[in-house]
Length: 284
Image 1 (cartoon, rainbow, N blue to C red):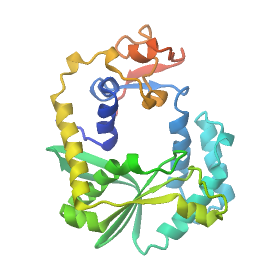
Image 2 (cartoon, one colour; image 1 turned 90 degrees about the vertical axis):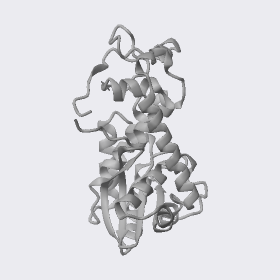
Image 3 (cartoon, rainbow, N blue to C red; image 1 turned 30 degrees about the vertical axis):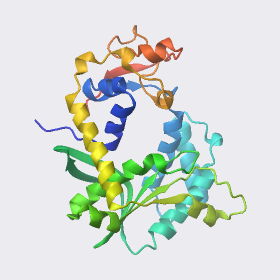
Image 4 (cartoon, rainbow, N blue to C red; image 1 turned 120 degrees about the vertical axis):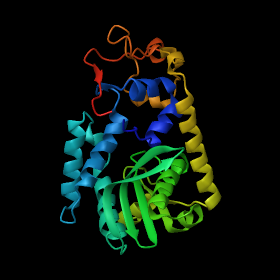
């Protein structure tokens, strides 16, 4: 039987809420709902347009595409400055990536092995040459802070290092990691459009020791997942945190599906709408 792959998203889900991990990755439930997905959907609208990007697209065209996709995902496009996001995207694709002299791949998957388990990572953009790789992850947050993404980018860098057969020292030197924030607020209001786009691109630097440390944490969590007795994980195992605001299982009542009942959020007053549908995800 083919092993399921671990990813940063999967491992961080376990770290944040074991009950959500159990429902999503062990029981393989999926929920169709649009009441608590705005934070994620606003980014999906940007990502989907970025995937289709062509230099022929104008800023006006990109803006219209993002706003139409946001509306289709039940997000009011006027709540977010998609024109600014379109302007930053055009600079990023045409200038930063287009003039890098490196080969560009979008939505590129990298694969490797950690803790004896298959691991994968999805790169929004990878720019590569024989001895240099730049990876860029798009984030739709309001703030352009990078600290919370350090371990994620470290994993992606290590996966590339495995594929390139570089050791950690070589990987730390040859793989450059960036976060691009198309929707983040830029505090310096005096900057022009290109300067704001440049300010929205943040590089994350790693030493060899930091890279090794991040991977050690990732492998330790995989071992913890493998050692978990899932019969002891119950609905009241959930922990209230910021992720509840966009968790697909938040507020699900026992009457809808007794297996997916999240007593923690439900008892805190979070109530899922009656239109929610729960089913087993055939892709997992």
